[in-house]
Image 1 (cartoon, rainbow, N blue to C red):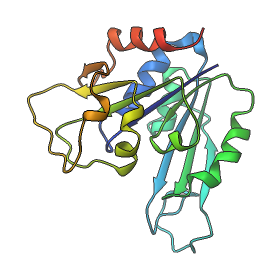
Image 2 (image 1 turned 180 degrees about the vertical axis):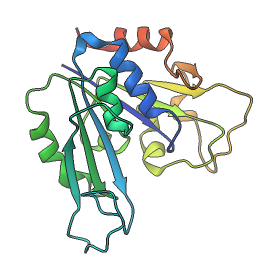
Image 3 (image 1 turned 90 degrees about the vertical axis):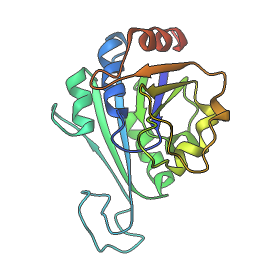
Length: 199
C-alpha cells in the first residue's frame, strides 16, 4: 500500500497538475485519488455554492467522480486514476469527514491525496509540497506541516519569495525540484517518488 500527499501553500500553483502527472507517470499503482477542499464561511460543503446553512448543517460531503472532466477531481480520472473522490468540508471540520472517507476508500491500496490538512489524520509514505515564490498567500496548513515535507517542488524563476513571517528552515536539506507550468512534473520527480514508495 502506498499513500502520497501533495500539498502546497496556496491555490492555483499546480498541485492538481502534480497529482495528475504522478497518476499518469505511475499507472501500475492503480491510484485512488482524493481532492480535499475546505470552504470558508457562507459556502456550502455539499455543493460548493453560497449557503446560509447553520454551523452544524452541511459540514462535509464526499462525492465519487464518474467521468473525466475539467474539475480537479475529474482531471484525476482523465490522468488514469482508478477512482476519484472529492471531499468538501467547512473550514476546520475535516475531522468529521475522515471516518466516512476511510469507509469510502475501503480496501483501496494506493492513495494519492491533494491536501495539507489531511496530514493531521494520517502518515503518508511521501509528502510533497508545492511552493511558488510569486504567490504571496501562504496557508496556515502549509506552514504547519512544512517540516513534514519529504521534498519541495519549487516554481522556477527569479522571483524572491513574498511570504510574510514564513521560514523555509523546516525544509532545509530536503530535495528541491524545479517545476514549470504547464508540465510541472519532471522525470527526476517521478524517479524520486518511485524510489520512495513501497513495492
